[in-house]
Length: 206
Image (cartoon, rainbow, N blue to C red; front, side):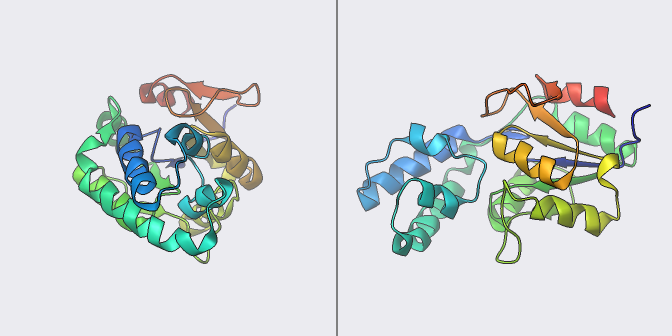
């Protein structure tokens, strides 16, 4: 018998929203201003971990992390119209809310931009768990563990819906069942026991 699901946690980019166009525009702006000449396809490989960790993995000097982050965030907000909601997201969230399932966002995007996107699309998800100086980002499990603790829910009664290997690794460390969103930015692996091709399919695991 499957465990009763009481808490569903979502990654944001690649699961609820398609923000690739927004990201590419912002990264092109960064390349232009800081003359770093790193193509977006290299940036794309690290989507899912905190922004400064992406910069580190791309070999960008640490003293540039803060100004690049601020510049990227500025253009991300200016180009928020490029962010699109995946089909039926509002419908699924409404169904889960009616089922009294607690919902949360576990994202590598900062709090301010995440909140702005939730407000833009009027998504009724109150719990937001971005990385912070107290919480390591994915693939570490800190954000997921905080979500469990804050809501007093066991890992076996939780699902985490993500689209990258970093989401999977975080969920594995937190011992939370993982649902892979194959329509997102990652590549499917044999390690993923649960997979959905559209968000509607999530109801099969509830």
